[in-house]
Image (cartoon, rainbow over all chains, first blue to last red; front, side, top):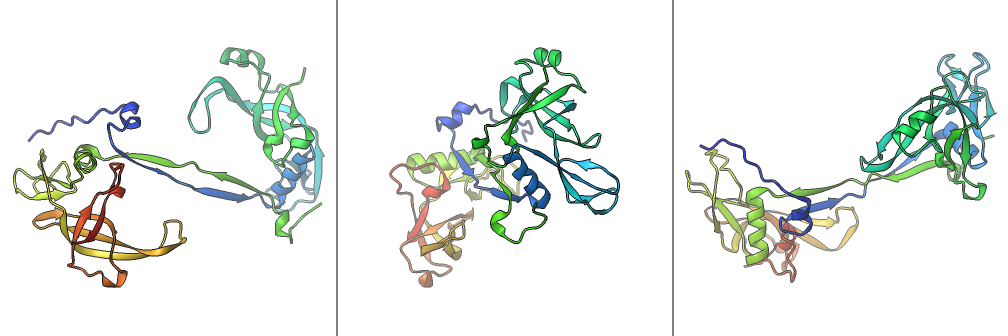
Length: 172
Length: 153
């Protein structure tokens, strides 16, 4: 018995042209994620051009993204705090792939920004912009700890989504 | 500021689409089966060189003898309903205007079988054991299983 596994090499064009038959399925799998009270308020804040944090009076921490419960004191947190739209880079990455693994010619630079006015280590994941068009340029212009500022969409275009902040740019 | 919601229209949510899809290739024998269905509008089985049984749809290996099958033959267009179900809803769970009969059909002396819609018969009239005939009558066959249907023989 021939046990050699030969396989059949296929090219994209074999499938596209119909030389090789295929069965295709495109799912319509949708989701709606309920933001909850704290993130709901945070998103309303973004629409108004504000970054909102949540303060616990017991430990005095201000957390962003906000949550209604202090995970350290184990109690409901107390008040909303409007924070600045500036911060410092906690960590960043230079990415040549999109979320769906498709390739990019210019890199995206996702970063965690520690927001000014929030407790140390509190930050949001967002994108850096105006930091160069190549890995070399990005690495030359971005350092951990560097101050950055939010660049907002025009007020009339904001929708109450995280993308209401277009990106964070270095403070010149 | 809001601390809890009593009005659902105030709820903030984020909607999206997972964008999931696949493209399935049918394998060597499956390709033969569907190419024949598309080009000659007939059903093709594969013959085991050892036990001499014919399998439909054609497959590459005999599941009993574990040997490769390279011989193919048409299995004819007349078979027997081995099992069936009556569908009243679409895949999306919307009601169908007309109920649809899906029948699993086997062929004399052939191992395996094929599942396809059974046309031209009232759901109440379908019986296991009834003879049906394959129809592959799309003007532009796609070379997939949706080209196939049955009618009473």
